[in-house]
Length: 371
Image (tube, rainbow, N blue to C red; front, side, top):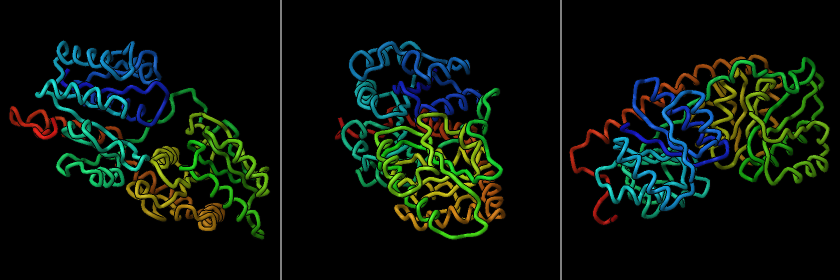
């Protein structure tokens, strides 16, 4: 195996989803890649189900033990390139990269919610290619001092439909007489559900004769669960709000008339947009650069500025009232989705691997000053 993919996350995550999509895309393209992840993790279970080449790590804590395990895999499996897909393993692989100068090292960053702090320092300087999942992350990497020649932008892939037998759209039900908005993501400040509640209050105060009954369902869990319920009560929209908890958002998006995302940071909205497009659901979203990388305003997504409840309320009203707009956004989302198929993800990474592996012997992106 010339390529080793390493992901240490045990809980389900967007990084884990993208790692699985990449491993499958590489396998389907006939490329050799071995996946290393924690034993019995959701990623390991999914990889086994997909019959992917896999090493389940008994001890996935970053440190000397993991370093020895990875070194053994490099030696015994003929690994020439290690690709890490979450930050905790970065230092361990950087140390291994320092010992084995012939080894190539790729690291992918899906989000930089810490304002790029993890994109600085000695470990990052050992990387041959830093793959950023959007132009926003790439800008933070440049600001942190990462050489431009090392930075690549590879956008994420959309997840496939839910497995057969999972009743998409059945939970909660799509209503004929109620317009259902679904928001999805962690209940934390970056998701800014507070603006969504204020937008709900704005819509509720408007006297519009032909406006259908409506409600908002939020899929996710986090520290602001109680605070959001209290705020909804104070704003008078508690009866229109359902907090679903941590579930697969695709099930609930399938029951939605529209998806809404009011994120002010991070890349949760990217995943929501891709899932909604895959399910044929129109999307209203904030104008974060991560979101603008994917869609076009009024063609595949309806944009509004972050932390602007009045503008968000306007988008919600338009989605409820304008069926032609909804149809246009659904069609535009389906068309945009073609850029985010897993086959494209696999092809772009395979080209990067070939570029690094076919470099002249002794060539390295790491300078002596970094050692």
